[in-house]
Length: 204
Image (cartoon, rainbow, N blue to C red):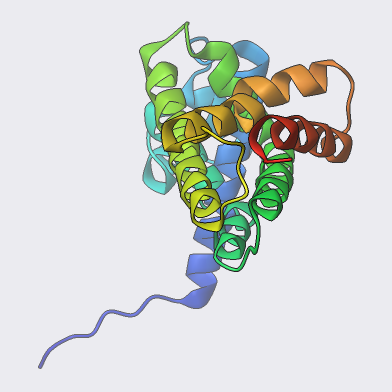
């Protein structure tokens, strides 16, 4: 007789909560003390779990970083923005969606991104995780650029490569850091960046 595997929903829920607690503790400690100086043992203490639990729920420090990136890529705001692009009716609407989507995602994932951006030059693990995160964001911007090209309404001479580069320039990691450093709220920052991008890319 074939034995069927069974996974308890309660056990899965508990494992998910543990994973979330471990990732949160890791992000906070990486942000406070730096990636290189943070040990797995310290993460376990902060999360209230055994060291082995950190490894079994997520993995070592490099795996923790990549798990944070994966969670950011799978964020509800990212999925919602990607889905909304298909029903957008103008390039201007696409820009508004990108501005709003990046605003919400950055707000939710600011701690993780701070770890990546502040430590990327200090350790190869962080540099790799930051590279993966940037590549994922650029891929989403490429989808938005393709949709804008389909819809039209762009300034004369704006092509796909320039459009993809411009979306990163206006809504990528560096842009949001500057906007926040200037003291703008997430909503005001989204509106300002969208306005700048619209003036640069859309036909008048």
